[in-house]
Amino acid sequence: MRQPTDLISLDGQLDVTLTAAPTSVPWGSGTRFALTYNGTIPGPTLRLRPGDTLNLTLVNGLDEPTNLHTHGLHVSPDGDADNIFVMIEPGAQRRARYELPGDHPSGTFWYHPHHHGTVARQLAGGLAGVIVVADGLDDRAELAATTERILVLSDPPIGQNVSVLDVSPQQRMMGREGPRQLVNGQVQPSLAAAAGSTERWRLVNASASHVHSLSVEGAELYLLASEQRRLPQPVRTGSVVLTPGQRAELLVPLATPGSVTLRSTAVSRMGGMGGMGGMGGMGGMGMGGSGGPAPGTISDLLTVRVTASGTTPAPIPVRLGPADSATVPSAAEVVRTRRVILGAMGMGPGQFVIDGRRFEPGRIDIEASLNTTEDWQLVNASMMDHPFHLHVWPFRVLDRSDGLPPDPAWRDTVNVPAGQTVTIRIPFVDLAGTTVFHCHILDHEDLGMMATIRVV
Image (cartoon, rainbow, N blue to C red):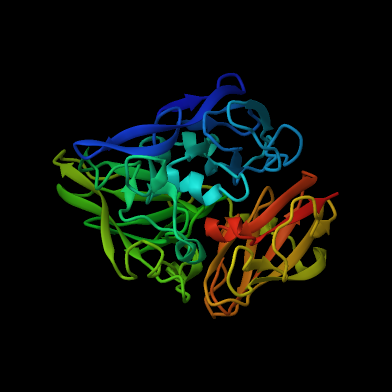
């Protein structure tokens, strides 16, 4: 299994140039067409610490406009930072500066294009990479002794030229999916590890629409972190569900020699499936007509060949840090409750809407006040699940109408099952500016299910 190149900050700075361009990447005994950052899938892993500054130059080698979104980072959405309203024309470049707060949570984040109308096409083509923010807890012996792997899950279209990125209107409506589930651009890669070691997997679902219900055969599985920060202690689980855009950090202790397999089960997006009681991502997706596997299809993603070593794995940490539930604002601090309705309006290019309106650049749909807290009731009035993603400001899940328990983790993406309501609490702290929230079935976003929020 290939690992992406690491680009690591030094003395609080990381200077990076990413070139988005079409290329040929390995496929079987030959090659396939892809869109890449710096010629690889995934792009380089950007490794930062809280308080660092990321100086990033994006060069557009595509034949259409593009830009970049640092998904999950708590950084400014304005100016030359995570400003998704800025477009880079073919042949042009843009230099951005992302300043991480000194208390930025550690975690697994990622970057991908966000040019409205072509997001699904460019991401499905391969434009994605990981951002790792590590803090002092990552330096502790319990975690430093693990073997860390970056696992980027994708399902690209397979072909020899740019026409492979074209999809039918039905595939856009359903949300495009590819024919194979890949890890770091590879089909069922394998790796070797010694019994007595512990794997630490940083997973990113970089698919345009596919949802993974992940499980491990041959070893125990522990959830270490969700999208925005670690859980107070690792939680043993049988499966973790990742909707598009979601991430998870997993610990897999390799106790005995043999074979360990990471598997994914395709999930229907026409219903709702909690997965881990809501802890591992709000599942419920994958459907016919999208081009992907039928619900229930099991794919082996990765095999670990475990060799003998004569040692036993180090114990899973009992506690990694203080419970962060105390940082969740109380109900008394909530200044406003809103209803945000995710819906569909017939067929055609504008059928996916938020509060009855399709996205229009320049229109402010919601205005909130800096350093206040709001509760949002996310209502899915359609027949498909919609993963809701808010830029810049993490939130906590408070309540779910489907009866599943509230999510114990901070998130930036949560699935809202068809016909259900999910209530979230959002502290609009630290950063003012204008950005968006949208469905992370990216064809749905491109077709209008996105809105603009301004925090002042």
